[in-house]
View 1: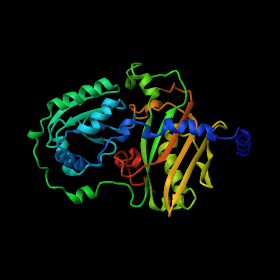
View 2 (view 1 turned 90 degrees about the vertical axis):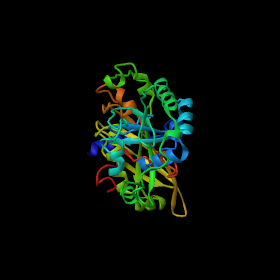
View 3 (view 1 turned 60 degrees about the vertical axis):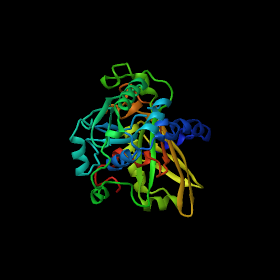
View 4 (view 1 turned 120 degrees about the vertical axis):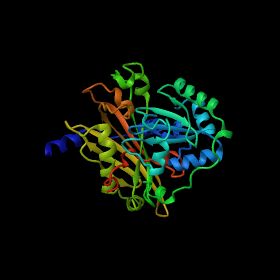
Length: 70
Length: 282
C-alpha cells in the first residue's frame, strides 16, 4: 500500500485547465440537440400535454437506460 | 437523435417521453394499464422508439441508430396522426398515484452524467452494434445518465466541502461503470471552488479529476467534475454507448463528466437509470 502511494505521488500532475477546457465542451449534454427536447417526467404528463397541444407522443422505450445513447 | 431535422420535428410536432420499461419503470397502475391496452411499444428492447396518440393508438414504431430510420418513423407517425380523431379527454388524473412516483429529492440537485472515448480506437463491436455496421456510431456516441443529489449534500457542497455520500453514489453508479470496479475511491476535495484529486485504479494507475463548484446564497449555482482515466468494454445491450465497442481486455482513454442540470429542463426530469432501489439516495 505504501509503495502504491509513492508510485501515485510520482506520476505526472493530473488534469490541466487546458485539457479541461478542451474536453468539457465535448462532454456537455447541452451541446446535443436531443438534450433540448421537452421530455415529460411521467406518462400522465405526456398524455395531458398531447391532448392540450394536439400532438402525438414520441416514446423512447428500452429495457434499460432509455436515452443513454446520445 | 441529434440530426437537426429530427430534433426540430420532435421538439415541435411531438411530446417526447422516455421509459425504462423493465429495470426502472416509474408508472402508476393506470399508466401500466394504458400502455398494455394497445401495441404501445412498451415491450420493446434496445433503442425502441414508438409514436402513439394520447388516447392509445399506435402510429408508428421502429427507429434505430441512424437519422434515416428515425425520420422514417416520424414521417409515418405524422401522416397517420389525425388530431381531430383523438379523444379530447384523458381519464381523471390520479394525483395520489402520480405523487407516489419517484422524483428528484426536494431541495436537492440533478446532475447530468456523460462519458465518451478520448481519441480513436480500433472498435470491436458485437450483435448490438450490428456486427460492425454501427461501430463508428457507437464509438462517437456520448453516454448519458442523470444523478440525484440530496438536499443535505447540496448544502455541504454549497458550503465548500464534498459529501462522502455523494462520492459514494458517483463511484457506485457511474465511475465504476465507466472505469470498471478497478476504480477504488473518489479522492477529491474542494479548495477555492476547484475540485481536484484522483481515482486510484489497479496496477498503480489512476484517473485524474478536475472540476468547479460555485454557490450563491447557500445554493449551488455551478457544479462540474471531469474525470479522465482508462475505461473498459461494457456490454449491456448498448446502454453503455461508446463503451460497447472498446476492445476486449484493452483499457482505453475515457472521460466522465458531471454537470449541474437546470431542473426545469425536460431531460433533467427523466429518471436517473441508477435511481432504482431503496438504497440509491443513501
